[in-house]
Image (cartoon, rainbow, N blue to C red; front, side, top):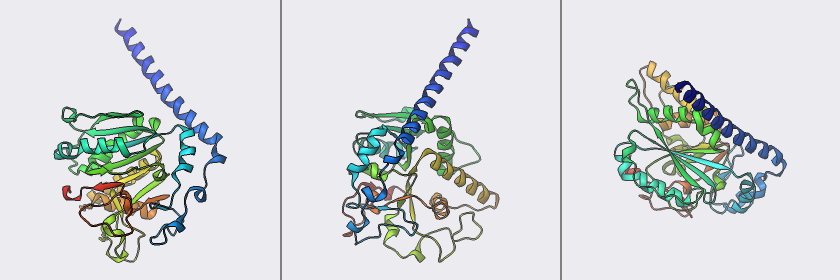
Length: 315
């Protein structure tokens, strides 16, 4: 009887895996079938609408500001593909009590409204999960965070666990994936104009500053050293996204960098690793500071429509 039960369990697991892969391949085939109809950048993005700010990078990637994009053109395309977007967030200790519920509830209202969304909540203790009410097309999955005694850095622990879950199932469940810190509140629609192969968030504190002052890792002993006079922008670690493959690629480089620095007795900040990665691997889309603004600062005239407020005092 136990052998029969084991066989049945294996069969069910294989069927579920087959179903996930089949669904993923169907989406890929649909993308291929309609590849010729995918909107060109000029179909939905008009950089001339915002002459007051930088709207295109030196490598011709769009910087998304309010007024530069036509969301309806993108909606028509992505609705046809029936895409699913993942949003991964790590919550531990006081962050669970102070921020998790408002993060999820505000994201439920404003993040990719009208699309299939899966919230991946990485926690150490599921009993601390606050009440969560989600609307149509939204669901969440709990992912246990496993620690290694050798590593104390929470960012490394989170990224290592996220890496495992992307490989295990997330890559088969979503077409795009964002990783965000929990100390944020969505204020307005964070829509499909933010989707891309590799999506980086410009840091509001540094966007209006001079490049020579960017807080890159300046020690030559670090794997993420960026010399003075080099670098494009300073990116915020609160938001990073793209295809699951691109998120995986960053995590792998991040892990290697941390491990190399650890062997040298050196330690750098998570954001430094992200900035070095994006300096080498240019993002295909950049989100303006409107997508992540610190409410402790009065918005300048260029900030017209804040999408997310970042609770910087919690850091």
